[in-house]
Image 1 (cartoon, each protein chain N blue to C red):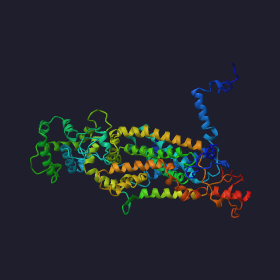
Image 2: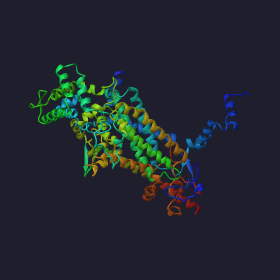
Image 3: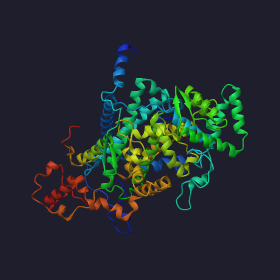
Image 4: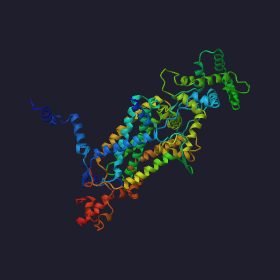
Length: 240
Length: 64
Length: 330
């Protein structure tokens, strides 16, 4: 067989019935079924997605990106750098304020999602991965504070050890061991946060943004108080 | 780094407002909270309320 | 797009668990542009905050700085380490096997179950072994030998007497002055340890005791935390447990306000006086965190959003549009 181009050749030999039972083919089909491109990166949202509260998920993600990027710069230079260099102190400040902004936006996002009861309609896993992201982020921030190598980290370590020891975890999670805490902070916990956040975002894409609660009876009564419906951008498509 | 760049970076690193020094705290019964944390929490509430009440640009009227 | 909850339902519709999926209008929404705009906004905010406010970096306490700024506190703590009466020496697991001190909830003590994983013998680790690293000084070597070869009761007698004497001791011209007494070799050992601390050598000896490259600061940190010097520094910065300290940061920087509920319990009885406070608070927070994770399954809690009706504000445009549609069709 010969084809006019590589693309043509690949297209003619892709997705063939005889390959359908392959693990690769099955995984691809499941992936595409769960996340067709129009759902993975949509250009439309339901008309009810019309409030500033909806941007706080994106703001949280953006803050996380800044935390990770500034953290990478700190990692490139090593843990002592920011104590000795003014550029280092500035990057550390970006990292700290990135974290403050991350938690700030995440909490507002959580409040919004709670009051929208965003777990409805088979979206419980979305809520669960969101809360777990919050909890694991707290652990990541905690190990970050322990990695500062200054008075604050000494204090937090010597105080927190009592709580952690009381759970029995102090036997293998030693908050006074800088090396261990640093590695949890820059490798294990960011991975955990990353995986949870990716799953959380994919779940949002899969299920879509939660629809509103059912209307009150008064919402469906025609009312002359609603004049030019066009200034609400409604085009008259009836809800089924 | 040139001297100009160094000076610029040094100015970046020196804070305009120095938050080091004794912390200011607010006491209310058994509750004790730093002014800084109180500001953060108050801002969170203000931003949450604003996010709900501020009008969101509508489709068709947005300059996108 | 999403599978319809209604068509697959064989169970009763519960408004706090289920929802009618959307069959209505979709409007253009550029989420990549939204993320790019969010990123620009947050980047500007972070840059602004970093430039204007910077970040804190309080210098750490060292054994050296401690022994220089609060020498009496240092020597008193060092004697308790030698005597085995310090908070670390009597901590129990994971540092040592002191009986009856571990925190528990009822009969369950997880820390005792896990056992000793970071063994610390404060007399050896904090005093005797560091002294042994010093260049050989015949009198000091003899003092150490005399101490370690004495029976336990004799050692205890010496450390008790010396510890009591330290209650009235002073530093004069950088020299520790105590009234004469039967201290055995303890006084000499502690004086040598203090000199070692003030030179900075004790910091190093405590970190790198087993290997060249050390990253484990357990021993020096526990030693420092046994004294009151660091505790006083913490109290001055409102970092103590009973000052809502877990939420706070040094200086006037914002801290970790998201830990408010965790630190709250330490402010109220019975946790303020309980010797099991840490175990109890952790248990409570594990339960509450689990409940937060499981909100979608909790009938009363998951009904709060519908009852509180803040959603009416969030989706007000949508509910208004339903009336407008009724206008047209009705």
